[in-house]
Length: 289
Image (cartoon, rainbow, N blue to C red; front, side, top):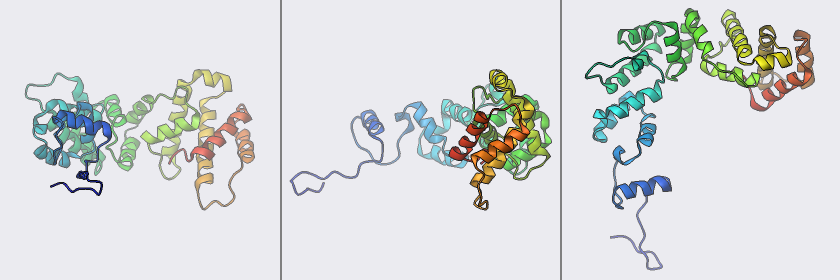
């Protein structure tokens, strides 16, 4: 029996924690009846169902298929999950054999990423053995670029050994019309910077500098930039980032000091441009965080 309120009305039981739009959508698809228990994904739009399931790992998805009936056999759903999690795989562009299962592919992709995160070369070998990837630098770079399931430390080890894959990965970035510090942040989100300065960091910044100039020929002409000048500016931005964000640095570098120091290394770059670089780091933060 529903409980009565003091004003004579009936107190309703707790409502599910959905947003108003989703709650009314579910009620309409249930015929206006409130039901308890798990939501059947068939009641939701496909895009929303895929979004919900994309937060689950392979083990949880297998468990979810026991709760949401039909999930384990819905190939369109598993296809969407594969392509939303791993945006590029060589196998996507092939004619798939009869009886191919995207559910099996999802589990193999998950297993391969777990293997990669323990041993990068073994992970790549697993993908190659299953026919998921082909051993071509461009294909491997696209796979890396369009997924976030790979551990960045292991990825750094792999890219340090496979410079051909690193070259292709750099060319996948489009820095057109991006402000230099923002482009550098975007670059380091895909290819994490090493913790210490060394040959690998120098290689990354060199490749970034050339790619940035290639993507921004108009800016290069207008500001008189060159790959060498961008290289120096990138190192200046990294050092400034450390200076402004580190709690161990008591006397922070001022904007005037940064402009003066940068001018010594890059004679053709205007003070206004360098000042804007300083403002970006001061307001937004580290370029390689």
